[in-house]
Image 1 (cartoon, rainbow, N blue to C red):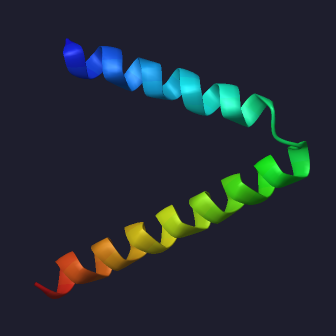
Image 2 (cartoon, rainbow, N blue to C red; image 1 turned 90 degrees about the vertical axis):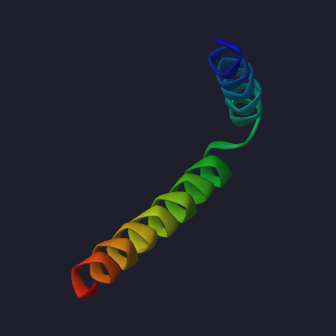
Length: 51
């Protein structure tokens, strides 16, 4: 339960910060994070297939 409360509090802080950033900066950050997650996903898939 404490984990859920902490996660919701962190989401509130991050969403609050995102609401105060300019839209182009927010979209650039979202694109960078999405690209990083995609690269991570591909590397994990390739790594598990070789094992």
